[in-house]
Image 1 (cartoon, rainbow, N blue to C red):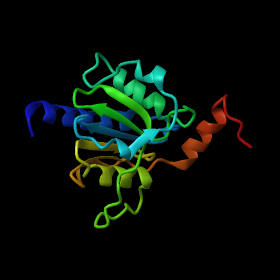
Image 2: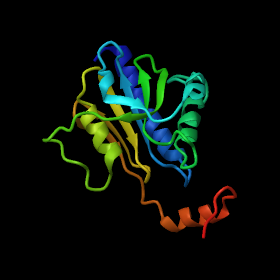
Image 3: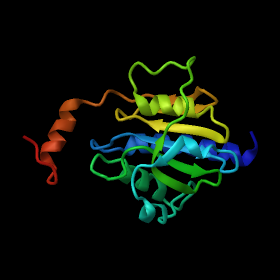
Image 4: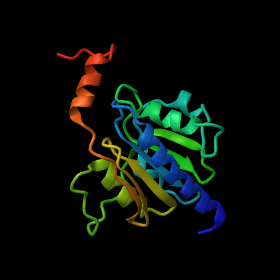
Length: 179
């Protein structure tokens, strides 16, 4: 892997860990696809939401401060309209798409994860697509994975998130009605 491409994949790994460590109890999970636009198949994704205003924010890997992490944490909150789907970044680290329905072909020899769901499996299968350099996932429970070429290149598991903490936090939140 060339030096600039190694740098973007290493930046993705660091960003996944940073998001995992800073995620709030309202974190819904996150998927990030780093791709080369020259050879990435456009029939494998589509917009889930109108994200024009977010894409113009211009956060990218290497932003000054934690702009990228803050943006990713914001769009990954349960209450954010763009919390579903994947975030796409080009090889320069620029966010190009948010809230993308990412539907790579199923790869029969890759088994779904016994704990993590569809986002994890889509990331694993999608990491085999032409033009995909890496796919990162931070699961709702804050476990993070970086996939390359159909395998897990990096993983970091977190202590189990206690459901009573999430329930208590939901009751303290003013914008939700909890029965």
